Length: 367
Image (cartoon, rainbow, N blue to C red; front, top):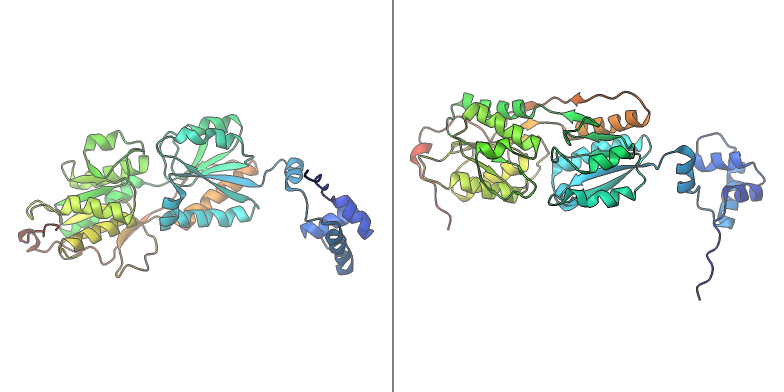
């Protein structure tokens, strides 16, 4: 038979044993007030003797009306988010601001094939606020449940709901700036590698009609920005995941064609997709940027990449910190409005004018 659980020692019992008031003992554990060192030592010794490990967090949250936890919804598997340097930088910036509240961060993976599956899970959590840290689908079924509970929400461009305070980018304009840079260099045949347009997307060619009915606003708008410059007849491929492997596969679909049809430039919707496109070019014996120029989107640190990627900088850590600032204001009951974050084009070593002989050089077929 199991022995009965020993009752948890209370702060009052610690104070009585140390011969101080409960408020003084509380100051010792909170560190929020001046207490003589010998008095603090007596309180700590009493706590050790009684097995007291600190204030009960549940009781504290009930007293203050806060759980001390902010839920962070991450679309897809957490594995994929942790492999994406941009996603990690956003989470890092957010964590820095939440630490100042202070509040912990609870990561909640939301399946792309069934986003409503986490609703029962969310219902069981005591959360002060919820952040949608990545650019997920425009419509998310969890918003209704969270709003009904009165939980404030902040998003990184999605879900598209007035109850979610947003950080926004001019996705279309930023993508068009990368495409315009290539056009100004003299490129007229360009291809586009997009992030997923739907939750169940596979890596495959897409049409402008596919772009228009996209479930993800960021992928849609970046594709529209590309088409604003190079037109709707330019080849485009979407990917199942915005990673290097899928970028390479998409790059092969665009580049492994007869030389007269092969793009001399590729606009990718993320830096990892751009690196995949560069690998595809190398697999085919093409030189970057001599035979094909490549641009990305994000501006993440790529210490393993020799050179500097031409890319759109969107400052992930700053976005994360801004999300944290929004959460702090929401929890304080302050008025909060959407924020437009800036982007800028960084020209690196992966873009150059098209080589006059490139169109006459056939691509080498894959083995």
